[in-house]
Length: 288
Ligand SMILES: [Fe+2]
Ligand SMILES: [Fe+2]
Image 1 (cartoon, protein in one colour):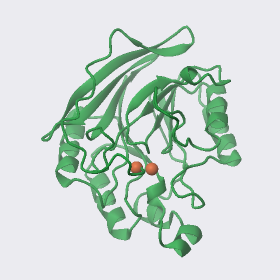
Image 2 (image 1 turned 90 degrees about the vertical axis):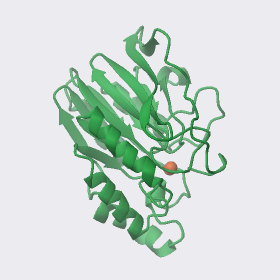
Image 3 (image 1 turned 30 degrees about the vertical axis):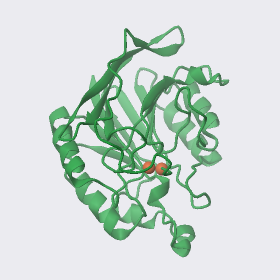
Image 4 (image 1 turned 180 degrees about the vertical axis):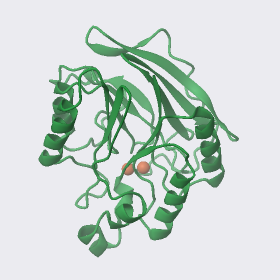
């Protein structure tokens, strides 16, 4: 059994310091084996914002696996955007754009989906897909396999489809054939969990797709600040969404997931719906 905390879309530059302090306290109480950070650490990829993100990560006393998001590439500095899009990210956060972590029965692998050529959408290259296939197929089948990316692979249930990560379905099929169990992503600032089979894709493998909301930024989309705590106990897991209530993070909803009849299903009734106890400070129209 391992606990993985999944935080996303910190957006330093649009962060709420009180929420960040509450998250640090909560993470210390949860005590995860790994903190997976699924991108958008900064708002505009400025040096000061990366320094603030670095200081925040340095205060988390647990191993971390981090991938960049579209906001971690400069938007208005066009020369830097195309000449050194992730230069500051690599300098301040990590030079490793293919991070991997393994502990006991769990392996977690990150992929960079941020691109210079698009304003906010993401993409996975053919080379990255082949890299992921090699990594995932090289991990024994009795290990629980997790992918971390910034951009979403599937839309929120019942909502119009947002732009999804380019070549995402090909990537899912590749890692699914190699026994991937779980995908963690962000970008939408909306949290949800769904089995990949809900998308009616030509993917035969069961994979649970888990999205995280924005952990500490004021770029809400009709949700409070949240993050995910995954207690992975193969072959199943418990997903707990922890939401900021104005003072602290507390359990907002949770579900026990198991693979049944070729797909991930939540057992019993899911917990109470998210309570938007923090009023969104910005319009939900704001792009993530
Ligand atoms: Fe994003
Ligand atoms: Fe974001």
